[in-house]
Length: 74
Image (cartoon, rainbow, N blue to C red; front, side):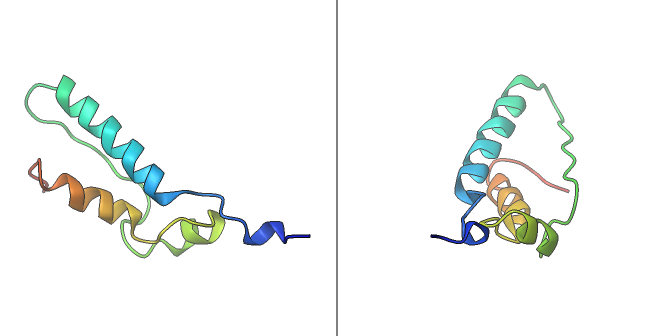
């Protein structure tokens, strides 16, 4: 019997893909400036990685980094 605690519960790649798509949709509907707030830690989010097996600690930073290609971030 496989230990359920070792199962991957969170797919970071899917999360990044879906979040990016949703942010792009919202950006497309906005006119001018858009303010997005990211809650929690942006890097080294060990708590999320611990409670969501499969979550990469720097997922939020990776999402923001990918957005920099298309937007100005301050």
